[in-house]
Amino acid sequence: MRSFNRSTVKEFFNLEMEDVVYGAAAFFPLDKNGQRFTSYLAFFGLSCYLTLLTIPFLTMLICGLKSWKKVRCLLDHGESEFARNLQMQLYKALIAQTVLPVVFFFIPFGFIFILPIFEIDCQFMAAPVTLVFAIYPALDPLPTLFFVDYYRNAIFEVFQCKKVRIEGTVDESVSRAYQTTV
Image 1 (tube, rainbow, N blue to C red):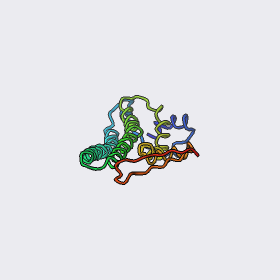
Image 2: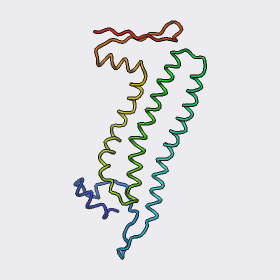
Image 3: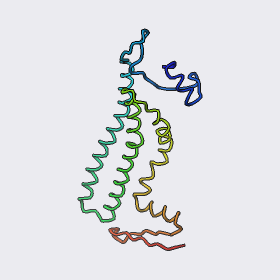
Image 4: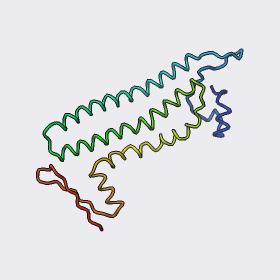
């Protein structure tokens, strides 16, 4: 693999292979006679990578389904309108926080792992996936900040120079927001 990747790493990154830590696989390398053969070790490595992707993905799906059932049951009970509204906002934030890693992690990394089997060059994906991987920690809290009224109103207050005061009534079944311009 080191000799196979040496020219690409030198051309695109101007680095020597001895200075690089990498994980790579050649699914159909050439043998000593120049004949292509199937590297079962590479396919075993791919199955390990895909297992590492599948476990958290299935965990997210199962927990999301259980959360959906719990929230649906909570909404059917006689809770106040205020509590139902807050539960729904938190549930929407949870869904958005589930969609983010699927879109920014599982799909791109799945393509990067699968495309080489079909000898499709996925080098064009390397820079965007690296960028998304780096900025994901900053993106992760955004759904909560935008879906939950209290957080969203506080953000608008900071960026629009408006004071937003949210208060509940005695039974907290209704909340009111008052805006005043500073």
